[in-house]
Image (cartoon, rainbow, N blue to C red; front, top):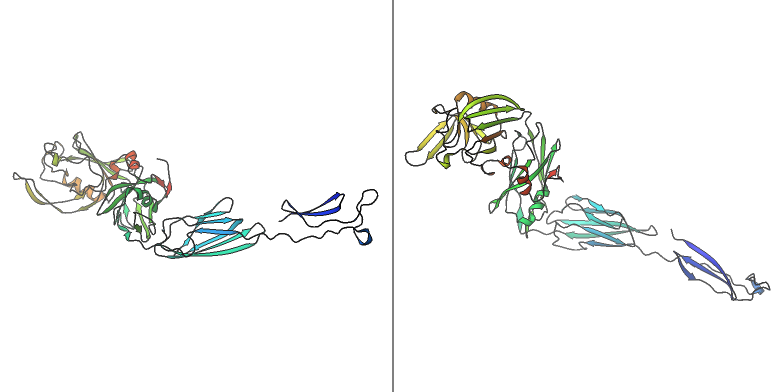
Length: 428
């Protein structure tokens, strides 16, 4: 609303009417004629010679000015950069940005600027429509068109563990193998784009297992083991994300969902006591004797640490040739795998030292047949096997899916973006 004020000023020259618009005083007329005897202005008509004021129209308020980045007609636009709108001489009423997907944005508190929230698609034309109004309430519509770049290198998801729709144990990290190497400065952008949501809400973090010419391997694991019955969903929002100087994600992926088992099963193997104890939901359900790898040769020492069950077979063929007549090619029964290098919990009816020594294994956990069969029938992928002992040989994170062998501080240190809860940053 424009305020108009008419002010009467008395003076020797007569009466002057001044119009004030938005606080500015603009002279609109002048006076002629003589004052009366007592100094009062004349009537201002006819023979009196008085002056009559005339009102001028209000000044026109210019339309709001809209500027955008990118500008109209721009090509080769970086899809990872935000789209921005600024308005001078007014405020934003609405912004619509559309291409292959509708894009949301955030309006500033004073209503004069807008910034897009999510990345754009690659090699896509966009239309940006802005409606702004000036201080007089008059609206102006501006439309801008631009096109995003086609990248020279593309990036995508090669594989995800556990499989979509599966049910796994409480010790199963998410392991994603990506198609390409990711430079350090872009790793946080990748983690941010790969959103893990859970019911109930669970804090966790991505951890870079490896990153080389064959692609990046990144795990996401909770701070502690998963709560039973957790529902997990991973969304890979990669389309348009810059992951190298000329490398971009080329598409989003359908949600990858899986579930955590309704029971918490963990096997703890104590090499020093030649004993394994199986816990379900925190209670001991079975204890049985074992024999682990020979302690006289480092290559045969059984790994220590926490491992996720990878799979199982009955039977499994095992081969080895260590020289000096130490050659074997045998089938073993009731075999549960816990490392890629070939560590199993399996039946070994030929081993006389089960329960008394670590002498007859090349690194596997030997059990009596009945115990190996029982454990085989209980476990699923992702169940926990933790091996302890004074003769330590720490398992590598990538020798299986062993991210839970790390403490939480190490996981956080190995993350570029940091801990999240349902995709939002969380405290460590």
